[in-house]
Image 1: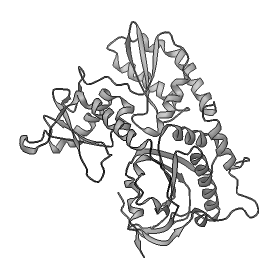
Image 2: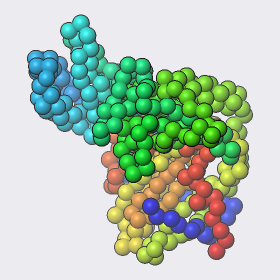
Image 3: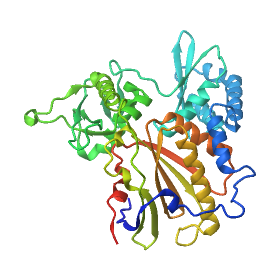
Image 4: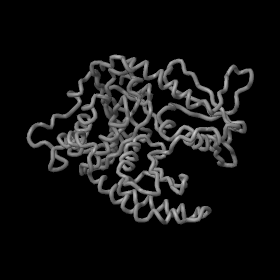
Amino acid sequence: MLTFNYYALQKGLRRSDTVKDTRRGQRPRLTTTNLQQLGMEAKNNVYTNGNSGDAAALFWQWFAREEYRFRELKANDSDQALAFLDELIKQMRPFNSWLKALAGPYGDNRYELIITADGEVALFSKVEELVAKAPPLEHWQITAHKPALGFEGISIDMYEKRFSTDTTCFYPIVREHYPDEVSIVLTHVDYNEVDDDQFQAGGMIYLENGLGEVNTATKIDHYETGPLPPPDSGIEVIPISKLADYLNWREKEFVEKYELVNAERPEEMFNALEAADASGKLMLAVIDVSFKDWPLRPAYPWLFQVDILYKGNDRGLPNVSQLDELQETEEAIIQLLQGNNTALYIGHRTYDHVRSIYFYSSEYSTNSRLLHRFIESVQFNFQLTFFVQKDKYWHTMEAYYNATED
């Protein structure tokens, strides 16, 4: 992981001061439709069919035609079951390249197909979109996300380790400066530090099965594994069966704390920053530092990072024409996400052929849908991707906020 020391080039700017004026003459266009206008169309049509809708229809047509092959497999024919799921996942790729699937008996001669994003919050809306377009299927229950099974009566065996109510407990980690973060240690009776990666992986799968995929990804800010604490440590371990109740209680507390708070944003103040990596490659950033000491940051806990990949020069920076297109695209995305008053634009970083645009949002679902529709609706001269992660205290911004004077 690269670490940079940022130096302030200019301070106290408004966003309009950091944006090159492209209004003189012909505005750059990425398609025949003005990109900012298209951004608004993407917002207005987020729930309508587009190319992804056609891909969804084709996928469900394939599944309705081929699903009998899975139902006719013998109970112990795991190789053929996995082969069918591999084929099914390939059929989903025109809709979305990253979704996965699970399938198995559902009871009463029925089966269940689970569409999953494997915990990637940015893809939850695509899972829900695909499942919403499923036709009625007599023999199948179609489920969005891995469901919660509860911890009682389930166990996960991985790496010759068993995760169950008999082998696991948990306890909260309390961090004085980050009181709203939900951090837990999952304990295991056989834990050893050498195998921590295995305990982490197995523990996460166990949590996803017990809590469900969405709850695991959205209600836990930080997770680690460890041994049972010594009896004289003063740490009280809690049965794993009570984890869901604990997380629901923490979420209720969080919502009550911030739901009625007036989250009027501070007056913007952008700093232009510069840093260099070990090879001397420049990183340039423009960040709104007015949020540095803003006490309401946890009310916007979801970091949205939109990455625009461009060819650039041998220093990894864009040329003039690319800079204009990057600017146009960024302005369209700002207009798109700030239009529903749930997202705050924080700034951007340009480094190593990537423009990364930062937002913090009070929710993840609607803004994920907006971004997916926007990316699917426009032809760009570069590749766009985005990810979403929980970051209640905006730790990702600390390197920018703590930049020193040059």
